[in-house]
Image 1 (spheres, rainbow, N blue to C red):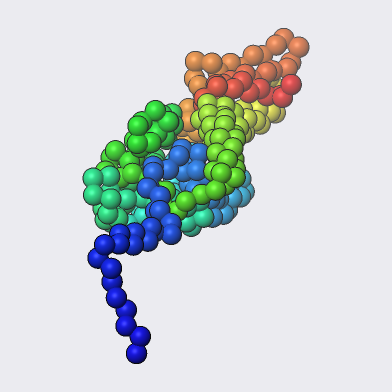
Image 2: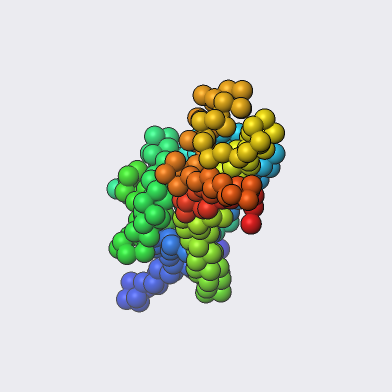
Length: 282
């Protein structure tokens, strides 16, 4: 049997260095966080939103009912984000991008309440003209407003190659620019479904008034600029006046009757731009 001897005069063999040094986790960048959020929003809310838009465009709903329909878009997203942001779970978007949400103080997974507050915080961040999200661009730990509200931070969950980091940064930056333009157009422009609905309702109302003008002409032989007389012909004067007030600004409403036996109705819709509507249309 071969005997192994140890020479105490020789240096002890150096401990084997770990094959791979674990990279310290860092806060996730704003661009990759946006990519993850957009993925999650797309798979959960966009199908519902398209269905809601289809329904609204084919139904005669009041403004309050339209808001209720679109408010329902957010319910599945809130449930999804809350469940998959607590207990160590991650949403599909965050898994694909390689980031995760943890407690800022302890580094442990968020609880259910914290995840729910964080999800609601998305809407608070957006309501402040997106400034709550932009806070992450200047914060040292890249924490947005909803992170501060919930006591969370978004961290890298795996190492990424240079190419993957570059792709996520470029993609996220372009998407953020597009989204912000779309968001502000929806909020202040005439492109939103709600705004289009308000304009359409105003156009329909002046057309209804025009129809009453024709009835008045058939009965009395002339057109009138007296809206009260026209409302009496509607069959329900109270409802007619209520519909007119809901659709049109009173002080900008005009009915012009000319001596040659024609008339023109001009008003402004109750949209953000107070769009002018006419009857007969120009």
